[in-house]
Image (cartoon, rainbow, N blue to C red; front, side, top):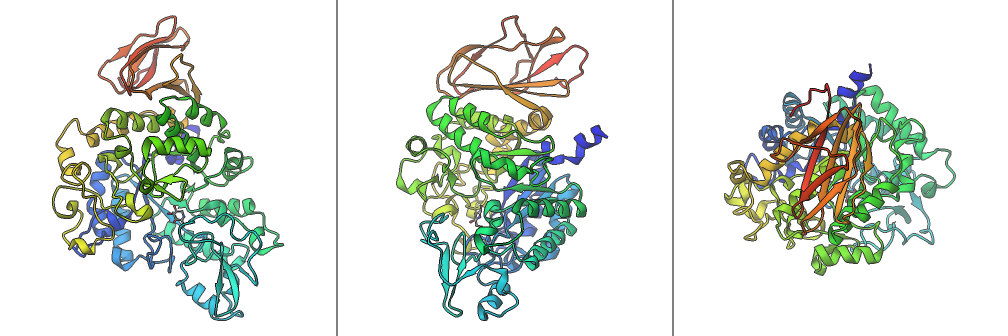
Length: 558
Ligand code: NOJ
């Protein structure tokens, strides 16, 4: 049974996840908006790259005031993106190519135009009133914890019609649902069940800690938030045993562990590694691995059937909220010194390549590092070709510009008029589609795209990174981040030089006598000897090396 469990049941342990928004991927009908029919045409592209799971950003009917995270119907497809039929065709095509699909589950709140809220605010006696959280007066701390300080100054908004305030963790047009209400919990389960029935393999759960806030919202309710999350997980698993919950839980390490589930890891299967991501940028800025090492050491232990999800950036501001003010200032100075590159005082609205001045060695080193960190790698669309951001676009949307397929009109994303695109394409000479696009990179063996494809292939062949026990390897060079992952008698070792300086180092690696050498997994050198004193390496600036220990009697892919 063990083998079956490892090989496929926990498929997400060794997955490569790719996040995209159908709205900005490919427009099939020239109306300016990406759609499911377009996305379906590009499934082969993703399969060719080695992606094994697509994470769809919200595609539900929405006034689109928060890029779809403001839902008016949890059971539908936004007509701009196609029909439910188009959605099912896409999921079916992806499955046929061996790709699973997960989607955002945005149930912390609805749009204020959702029929539930419309009914709730029409009358204090509406049966939908308790779907939301109401107070006669906002609590004294009602202005604390505002997530979007550019737009809001309180978590409570007065509903003029009924004279009470409603809770909204995010924008005022996103009233929070009240999960203390059994009918809301039933709805959430029904939403999950609906999309699983249509072929989804799980969900990226939006804003988990906010969604689970129960007592603080409605006072004395006898519902433990983690019991609720456990129930939700149990329901999901009953409906579809291999479905996954990947949670957005950006909390301090001490608080994160509970979201995997107290004992058995029976709540969220995976959590995004926000702490590791933020520390990685600090380490990059300092060319010193210390911050990343410290952050990984501080992470709570992960139960065997759970996992971190690693990422370089996601669709939001690249948040640095868990760094100290001084540390954040260091990262800002290194990677986003202009005020216009920063957001909410806590993050950056840039993509990686421009932050690293387009230095290909450094960009590749960062992705090699991310793919080797303990966990499952998650790419944000366009990272594989090194897309940049469009700072002329407002707020977080600067990194959500249309996918750059070619140097044709609208980056090959749409035949429509540029004024009809949901977000303007990147225009500049360095990162615009004349310089950065899929079509050109497909034909260039040295391109980032082809390199990424090779990296993904290697990563998929190294389940040790996803499944194994990880351990840092001490080095005398502060700029080097070195670690090993051991799993079922197999070992991979990765070394990353975060600095622009070349160095020579000896890594202390001791292996039993059955070690016959190290297979070089990314380079063109077949095998590196393991001397008595350890592994000696000459590392170029921003070098990245992965090795697998070759043990006597093992028949590993060279
Ligand atoms: C978190 C999402 O990542 C973000 O994009 C969104 O604005 C908020 N949740 C509100 O749904």
